[in-house]
Image (cartoon, rainbow, N blue to C red):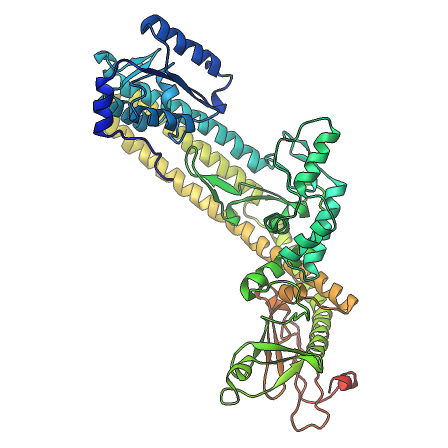
Length: 591
């Protein structure tokens, strides 16, 4: 976190303030966390400052600067900065506040500011606990500022502890996204807003169909679909309330992007997404593995299958720099490469030419670098659909094997002679409590017999080391038991989702760019007509062997493609192989 800024006055300001008559300026501050905790309100502070200036200084303050709802730990405050500027301009040479905590709650910076004021001849009066012209007050300045800082840090820790507990229990969120209505913040309950939810589904469907962010915004605005702010304004007016936030009349790309990235719409609550760096510091995105995830927390608006396809396409856009729907959609762009030179293949789209892909290196540099081999889009569609059909046939057996592994692991854990995960967790809690008791007892023994501190520390260090070793062993056993079953379950879940997507593609008989991005990593086209398909890394268990999935013999007059499964593949081996013979008749149309 960047260091808080503080004004340092120049020597000219010091000389000017020493020459002038007494010009007091008041300063009042109150933060949100101090409201209602026995602190004076802003108006009470102003009254106290006015009374002090009238009774003790026989004058009125030239001005009173107020920061309402601002933390004293930071010196980045609007009115405080204006007060510093007034001092530099010679408009005041005496600061009056109710107490030192109003000036600031940062120990070092508050002392530094007070010392800088004294150097420039500016008197600082905190009516209840400090006056810079009183030598005895200077001796206790550090103690007072330290105490003020401890108060704000203790409050911050207490609030953070409550927030952490609520985040871990799944009952904490500041607001529900567009599409939901909060029923209870305390219980973390939300309900679907039907009108807004329909817009969310429309946005997901438009993006899944190939539209880009900007195109979606243009269409929604043209259709006069209310923006989120317009929707919230209408809701507030219906309830007889005022809506003071800014209202936009056009959809923005940032709004659509955030909606498409939010898994809250799948019924998942995700907490601890941001971590604040210190008091009043910047919020930093927390890594996903450290976030708390609660699936099936609330009613979903978007199905998991559609959400996964959208995320796959968003990642593909980042990798291939795709810009949305084109006049002639190229669903394989970014995923298809030449097998001979490794260069991406370019889409060829002309009115008198069937849509096809050609080697990009030949297209750019000529025959000296590669050949003019091409592949038609219709051929790719047929090959990919047949390939996915084979995967669906064999994928069921693979999922059943994985489910059997899950059941076998569960049965093995139940029949194991060792401790179960629940028992390990209970043991771990007991060890943690024991460690706390050891540290607490150590402190008590040292306070009772300070002359034996070295012997006490030696004894308790040995006890603590033993407890820490047992804690580490228990954590390791608990993690190992959880990892084995989680690995198999997560693999089965990914493959099950992929099989649902594949079934949807086969049933509809159509492919989209999102489908390609969700399933395929690369399609490699060779000069001799062979085509190889590589699935995404998460789906590698479903791949049909390691070779090309089709070929086109150059010496065969029919030059037809084929995708043939090896039905004799042994269990656990490759799911398919390339048959050296056979040309299925359904490929005649693509010769």
